[in-house]
Length: 146
Ligand code: RB5
Image 1 (cartoon, protein in one colour):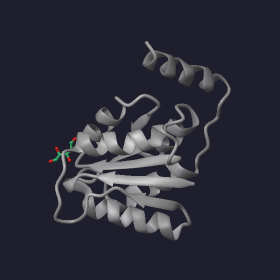
Image 2 (cartoon, rainbow, N blue to C red):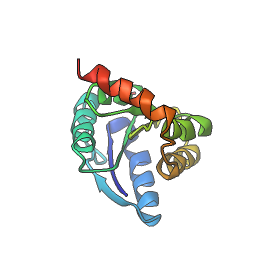
Image 3 (cartoon, helix red, strand yellow):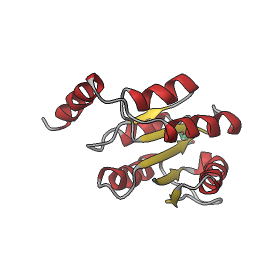
């Protein structure tokens, strides 16, 4: 699975830690930055990453900022993106099972590194359930096409 990571200046340390862990776990990971000492406006990073996921360059995206909220709001403006702010294990599991979320958003100032790692593992390992949920996700896609 190809996974792309992006963050703003509020989340560099957590992004680097999660990226290293996921590479160790065998995921094919790319890093859009930012690096330590750099800054960026979260909508710019969210747009850059979301467009790559929507284009099929990567299977999943991971976006991190202070709260994860700004990244999720911005990423969801890109057609084809279902970005979920993930804060608990149940949410991490069910946003994959039911929403087929393709971008995981995490808050570096709100979620500790141990929980963030567990949430990301769940997000990446859980498949989409399909069935009645595919019909509902398709209705979201239709909303983008108006
Ligand atoms: C940056 O200071 C902060 O606003 C950003 O990381 C994020 O929390 C926005 O949603």
